[in-house]
Length: 317
Image 1 (tube, rainbow, N blue to C red):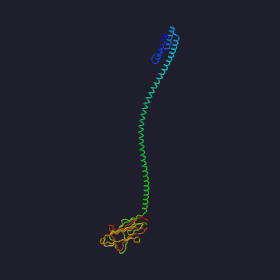
Image 2: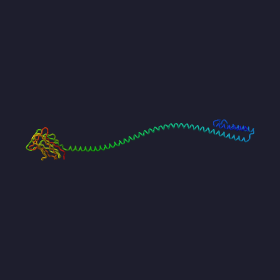
Image 3: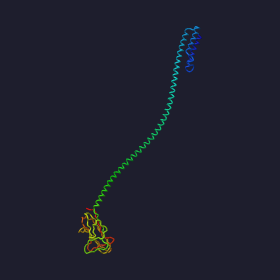
Image 4: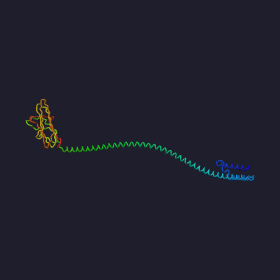
């Protein structure tokens, strides 16, 4: 009985040792199944010699079977453990590779985030510049619109001015044409350089001998007559200056045979008088106008041209 108990204790120790080998202690290669069987057979032989009871042998057989089963399970566990270790190594390698890739991706992500921040800043600057450009563009559009309005107004004014200029030019051309077609008639005369003229017993036609101007040659110094070259409206005037004392001075203006104007004056002791007359006449072509010195009247003139007769065509009819 003592040997059987000792053998049972030995089996338990072997079982514990096998378990320790699986966890890093004694390995399954140190104690094999054959050794266990040898021990059991040795115990069996010894038991035969010592007459061990059949119950104990049955228990030992059961213990043997359990030991074999546990040995197989331990062997399978070892294979699984090795397989798991290989898988773990592979997983660790993959994890290391993933961590490396993750580190690279994280670096690239950080670089991308920095680039994104930079792009956001640049985008904000561009937006600000764009807003400024849009504001400037709107201002330029407004200025352009104002300029276009001013240009349009200027063009309208220019068109009006051009039309007025054209009208004025046409009017000037018409006036030039009319002026070219209209005869140039104007004269300015002085009576004489010799001093006193008259008195005479009868009326005489005054002949203004000093011709200052005679455009159109309508006045004749020989006859003293102005002959209208065209039908129209004419202006005439006569002025005298006399400083003689106690004399009568006077004149008349005739249109053809009709006296239209008479003017005279007596020079008293002061001896200084003026006579002045003018009128506008409508004359037909060929009508004559002349000045007459009445009987017993006299006039005076010298180089100072104090007594003058003048006239000109206002406009033809």
